[in-house]
Image 1 (cartoon, rainbow, N blue to C red):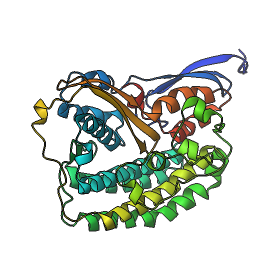
Image 2: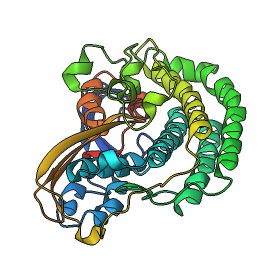
Image 3: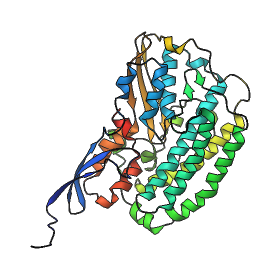
Image 4: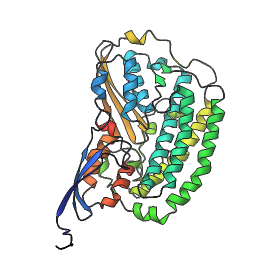
Length: 375
């Protein structure tokens, strides 16, 4: 019997559903010749699902524990958009206290920081450079310590609620969060040396996973994928919300549109988030209410209407289309998560010609949350 392998023969295999390419369960069905992918199909539905339909059966306040699960590493964006959408339809958004807006923005930026630390570590972890993801997960845990102090929960915070936030900042919170920021800054040079100055990462990231700029509008791409092309798109600047207009920052871009450029954008956005958090801690109002006084949320009814609200998550533009019908439940919610286009349309288009050894790192660079797809 010959031991020679026929590289012209097509091989059919499944990659996943549990693998280092995404933060959750998602499978990619692959067809290969040799070690080169010919085509692939994304399959989801192995974890959370059906959030949008569940919300049609829940009162407004009961929906909060549901939306947090739409992206586990960054649940706060979902909390914020659900709250903002229903506040707008209920006619109370403009009455949200100033201090609540500052705390909301602080929470959103803390969530971006934690999620970016996680995905940047996963980028090199998929290449076998184990210390970086270990360091990054440790640093993310320090940020989660602050979330636990704020909300009582490490993962699903349910802190941003209708009318503001659930509670004020604890006494001494600012100093403890600053200590965490300093710890992250002290570790970043380690990350640079083992990641961006490492020939293994550079050779496996530069020129790999290229996304043509003409795909941006055609496929509705957003986030670091677009900014790594040199295109300065960011919802925080393009459609300002909460107190972002009062903060001093520029949209971070890189050139190259490959895995290396996307990683560079995320590395620089870690430093940017640290800077933005410090600005907010310095300028946040010391006094004033942190939430509106509302009637019983178990019996809250919102007039008929519809709205679309958006925010800049760590992965890109995150949007909620919310429809109400005058009852105590939403008529329809449609979540526009960037993972849908990044993890299905874009990934499947990029797979032909990709070496299977690059698949995990390519998927990390697209930063997909599977529950955003099967929602």
